[in-house]
Image (cartoon, rainbow, N blue to C red):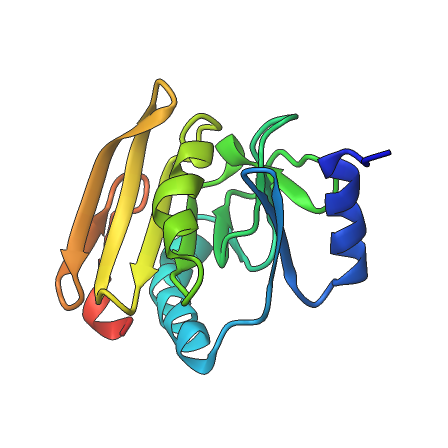
Length: 179
């Protein structure tokens, strides 16, 4: 008897608590911790977001599952920004539409999922902003304005160009500092 994906996901998550466990298109994906470059980019992004987030009472969480719906995938972005007391789906998962921004740094094996698969899951769930930082392409892409199951706006900038974040952020990411 084949166990349902949700049961296998929970088992994998419990077996590998130090790893990022996601479901992506029916696959259970176990990701190792990021490289020094990956973590440095995240730290530099965190430094830029922290002031705005703290000033508004928001929190920045690493390693939290994003709940996209009962039969949808389960993604774990590198960083998740949430308002105070966001709507949760169990203790380990925040509802996608209760987030303010999700961010992923592309790794050697994650490009397709980060650019194509995850936006198709995030937009229908109402995730307002999804930021993809790509050190290989030296670019940053922002998916925003979820509408009718897709992102109406996609903004791509080369590393070194500022990337303004829409309201309620009121700041621009200095991409030169990321890579």
